[in-house]
Amino acid sequence: MSTSQTSTQIPPKYLREDELSDECKKLLLTLPKERGWLISDTYNYQGFWLSPRLLQGVIACQQQFQAHDSDIILATTPKSGTTWLKALLFVLVNRVKHPVFEQNHPLLVKNPHDLVPYLELTLYVDGQVPNFSSFTTPRLLSTHLPFASLPKSVQDSRTKLVYLCRNPKDIFISMWHFANDLRLDHTDTRSIEEMFELFCKGVSVFGPFWNHVLDYWKKSIEKPNQVFFVMYEEIKKQPEIQLKRLAEFLDCPFSVEEENSRVAEEILRMCSFENLSNLEVNINGKFSTGEANKSFFRKGEVGDWKNYFTIEMSEKLNDVIEQKFQGSGLRF
Ligand code: PAP
Image (tube, rainbow, N blue to C red; front, side):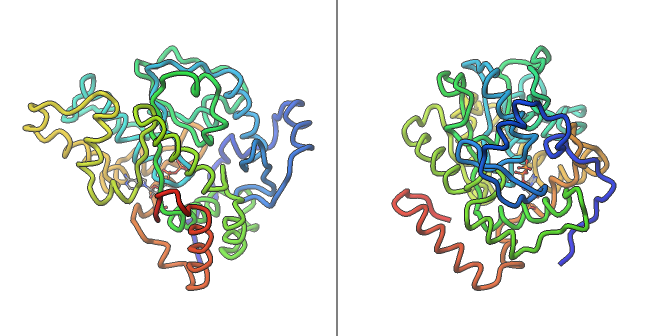
């Protein structure tokens, strides 16, 4: 099975194993280890899996990030469609400052990941306090951290959390492609079978997937004004309904005038896979941490897993899903 070739890519910072602090190196020696998706080993920290350099970013973020009540943080497991929701959030929240019909809209010249940066993967990846002076209010940020590992200031504040979830079979396939594209040593391609076994055991980037999803799901039920939970598949199926739900949650509902001028429709068009993946910045640009922007746009479809999964794989993951999500009210 082939994946697209991006061998000239510089490895993103969160995958580099150099420049690790002594504190981080010491901690790594004490953590459970498994074979990694992206680099040789992945480590279990606070119950989830991550790469060594990322550990440094996570710890810095947990210790130093000061949330504001007005912040909006998008939380996802990798490959849930984060890029899409970052675009939607940015355009939705900034539509007064940057009207959607504006020719020079920032989304047309910047990748969504640069507009809504990751805390641990980007802003804190060097282990230092980032400069937030260029951020406007509300600050739009994102994270792959599980709820229990969010910086305390986020948990204690009135920050709004938007959680995007996706069918784990599509996430698995999306991640497998992405990992093979990014892997530092291109001779070391992992087989789909090996990665699948790890995924089912819960060993995936920021996984186990089910713990990540269930924690945010429960919080969204407990605190519906603070945690908004939405599925990638729901947005695909009913984009306008879900966008309007999101706008209500963020206290920026569409006005009658906006309804009349079809602003929601235009936001969805701007943020569509077709539009974003064809922008120059997303074809030839590079993400600030090293990845080619185009690696965030593969197919953008629901159900691509069917082109890769055997019947046995599908049944096995169905069993895991059933067991893990039983009684939760969540279905995939
Ligand atoms: P990240 O976690 O590394 O930030 P993320 O954006 O969550 O990645 O996931 C990328 C997936 O979202 C890709 O899915 P695929 O591999 O199944 O194709 C990507 O194609 C998809 N995606 C990106 N932009 C859009 C969009 N505008 N609409 C729908 N899907 C999108």
